[in-house]
Length: 90
Image (cartoon, one colour):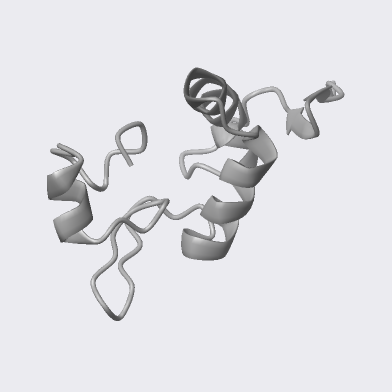
């Protein structure tokens, strides 16, 4: 049985998938929560993640940016990020 996703501010909040590897939809609830907490449009956060890491939490760019939002190590340190590959902190 397939459940239709609920749309909140342009983001499809979908039922959790039953796979071991996270997919784009698996981050929707977290994106909505964090974006709302920081007063940022959820669609913008999702677009940045898509462009920067393609939803791969362990992504590392050729210049050393890390994680979903591609934080540079110095920026992560300045922001007090202890786990740059941690989905919530990044």
